[in-house]
Structure formats: structure tokens, C-alpha cells
Image (cartoon, rainbow, N blue to C red):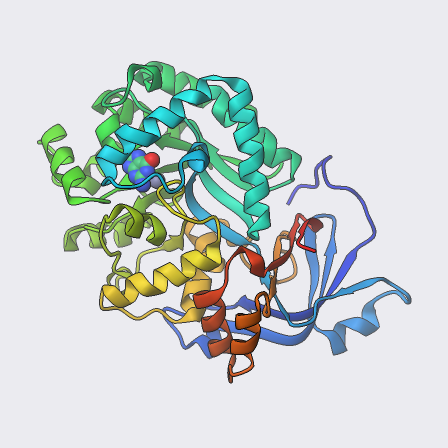
Length: 444
Ligand code: GUN
Ligand code: ZN
């Protein structure tokens, strides 16, 4: 990571406690070999990075005498959580219910997003959003803004002042939305390009070209989105795919010449590494194959899918041997119901069960950390605790409520401990959050 002006040159921070990270993929190997658990570990954070991680017995002798050590007992040190798909302007409509996707968009979402025409409203919302991410141990997110260019400025400013690694983009919409929320193919391209010039690769920030979904963009807009992506290497694409059956029928009507939903995005050059699609619940076998073949990633949004009644994402299908698809976990607020990636893991487990699949706690946690970093092609920077990674951590309190404390007393293995955390935990379990090596949130 390039050191930037925002990172203070403080003395190294040294943290001690039980820690968990991944050295492999628990979907393709046993969790015992995919996990690296260090019961009594030391992490050294310096200049924004993790500069040492390992057993306390081997690292302590290498540290200067008298160095201050912050010890977290009854806790688990994890890489900061990564939320692969979230709409910050929808923070104000979490829990606005009673409708399926398309009606929910019309009745609540598009109304709320129009308020972001006001700069102050966007700035205030972006600050609340970033603070809430940190309160939940989430240090990176891939964020949808509104159609307004300044809504993306507001989010990037908030993330920048908190030193967060953040991906975001202004939404592109030139049809099937209220007039006040529409751009044009050209104005959307121009605004996105200005935002890329202002923010992409600035310190820890990255830009995602963000056509909302194929139903709210004309073919011309998708064409220009694809052209912009080709012109700006290193940027991302994010959108939605196959969330509901009604939406899939609509896409078929809007793009009769295309051979399915994935083919629409593929045709306009919007698939491949660094492209990430929310949902993917109702994919055909051919589309699963296309996701695998192209390296396109899926953001799995279980609380959103439950809330809107969209369907059950099949993690077993996504990770089928020989044809695995890159998947990261996501809240998809405000259709999603919680900022907590721990709660989102719990929902992913329940959705997997209902879909007839299995999901271990080690796998769910992987989807919220290392697996998410891989889906975002950022696994060389975040999502692990290994030395050289950026210093983003979530410190988990394993006794965050009386009943969790009681239940943990009966947990006989690491997997069981993780399972209880996943099933019963929420924002109260976040004891502290570190961003770029510095303490960014402390619960008590
Ligand atoms: N599809 C298109 N836009 C949206 C959105 O804002 N939320 C969800 N859940 N699905 C979408
Ligand atoms: Zn979404």
C-alpha cells in the first residue's frame, strides 16, 4: 500500500489475543487446513499495515522493551469484515416492508434516493453510514450511491476521512425510474469519468461503474458503461442480477435479442474479474457456468432476499466442485435488514439450509472476509491477518451478551464457537475496529 498523508506515523500498535485468518478456501479444502487459528497471537500494526502476526511466544522477544500491548481477552481478532454490496442512500428506509422488489423500489427506494439531490443530506447520510459500518466491524464495502454525482463525492469524502478502503460508484439509470433520478447514457458516462478522475486509486478508494440493473439502463447506457470500464483499468463494475422471477421476465422483454440476464451484461462487456453482481438467486445452469468461466463474482445478500421474499440463494450450486463461482457476502441495505456481517452470516446459514445446502461457520466467515476480498480482487491487500496486509481488523467479543456468554461455556471446538457467534451474534459483539492500523471504533 502506498503510504498516504492521512496515515499518522505513530509508534506501532501491538495487539494480543486469539486470532483467526484463512490460508486456504474452506469450500475446497477441510476447514482445519484452510484456517489459521493462533490461540495467543501478537499482531503488530505499523504505517497502515500488519507488519507481524504470529504466536506471542515467537513475536514478543522481537519487540522493543516496554512497548505497550493492548490485550483482548475472551475475544477473537479477525480481518475486518467486507460488505460486498450495499446501498448507502437506503440507510433511511431499512425495514420499509410489505412489497416485492419492483414495488419496493417504486414505493420506498426511489422516493428516498430523490432526497439525495440535496448535498447536505448526502453528506450527513454518508457519515452515518460509514460510522455504522465501523460500529459493525466492517472496514470495506462496495457501495451503490444515487444517480447524483455528488452522492458519490459524499461517500468517498466520508470514507477518505476515516482512511477506509472503499469501493463506490454513482448509479447509472436512464429509464424506468422517476425523471428526477435519471441521467442519460452520455451524462452518466461523463459524471462517472469525472468521479474516476477525482477518486479512483486515491489512497484506499476505488471506483465502481454502477449501472443499477439492466432494467433501468438503455442498451446505449450499458454500451457506454462497458466502454468506460475498458478505458479505466482497475475500476470495478457492480450491478444486480436475477434477484426475482418478475425482474427476469422483464429483462427478457427489454432485451429480447439477448440469451438471458447474464448475456445482457456480457454482451456489453460488463462481466469478468472486478465485476460483481448482487443476488444471482435464479440463475440457469448455463449462467452458473458463465459466472465460473468469466470470473464474474456474486454478492450474496441473504437478509435482503429474506426481507423481500426474493428467493433462496443456493451456495451449494455456487461452490459446486469443478465449477466454483467467486462469492462474497453482503448486506444489500436497505432491503437487507442489518449492517452486521455477523447477522448476515447467520442469515446465510439459514438460507443455505432452506435451499438444501450446507454452510459451515468457517465457510460463512470466509464469505465475509477472505472470500469477499477475493471476490473483489483485493485479497493481496485486505481480508487476512498475514503480515503485509492492510491493518483492518474486527475485534470480536465472544461473550457479548449474557446468553451468548452462557452458551459459549458449552462450546467444545473452534467450529462450535464460530457457529454460536454466527447464530447469536450481532453489532454488540464488535469490541473494536481497526482501520489502516489505527483504532477507529471502540465499543466501551
Ligand atoms: N435491483 C435494482 N435496484 C435494487 C436495489 O436498490 N435493491 C435491491 N435489493 N435490488 C435492486
Ligand atoms: Zn442491491
